[in-house]
Image 1: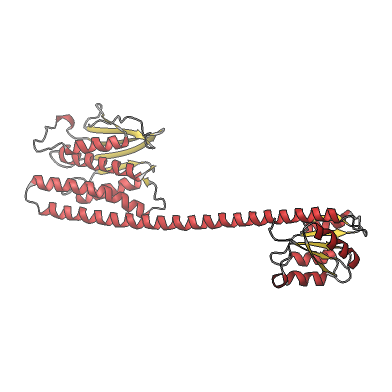
Image 2: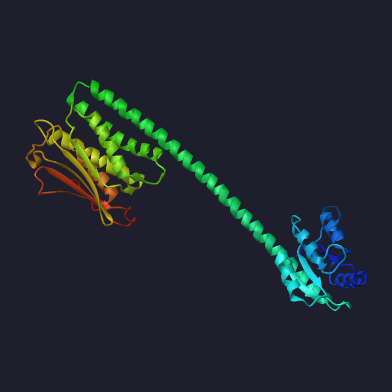
Length: 367
């Protein structure tokens, strides 16, 4: 309840009864203002800002001119109207129902001797508490809506910034990949050319993830089949001659988080490039990349129909590719196995669709 003395506007054409109400409620801590008609009461409410606020209204039903229900309807149309206690001498309950439906906070039956004044005091107190609760509820709802709007604006700004970051990072990485490609093209030594080409593929695998995030509606996930198709297209374009003209992909539209997508892309890059170098010593041949879901796990395989284990180890090999595959497999908490039944070389990785729990030990092993 307000700390100041609350003001009750009593609208009734009975001046003697209004005097009793004023005297009775003044003793109970109220300031009472009287209006002898509905029109006068409405005017007093509209002037409330200049002459002191009206906290609660007691409104009689039977008056000349506007009756109580007509006055009530107009009060409810006033912005920030005070609560109204409807007062009548009639025992007709339909009037009470009509008044409450029209917006009255409470209803009571009056008498000519003023015995109803204690009830009016109780009703006025209740109407004031109800009005305070309603105001507090509206303020809380307004704050909730404002908070939601602020959160939505911040989320939109964050998404825009993330897209811009992914765009810039993707472009920068693509520039680096292009520079590595140019450097590889002009390198005289085969070892240098191979090292630069491998580095270019690794950078391109990461750049593809950022490009995917920049163009995607969802910044929290990457669709692997689309990502791998773009990655393999990059590998086809960077291949020596036409040696990867038979590089194929079969992948389901599986979504995973960007960090794990990077690991998958780097693994595919390493194993595909390894197959390009060693699977077909006499020319090109098919290389297949497959990604399927198996329950809560994902199966990724890179296979060729080449010489398999019959290939001799290249003395120039540093083993970097195997170490990179092992590191990325550990990031995925993936198992890495060679398929002994395959005629060429087939490496199969199995990892969970969602990241492993922090305490889980990695089962990854280099193939």
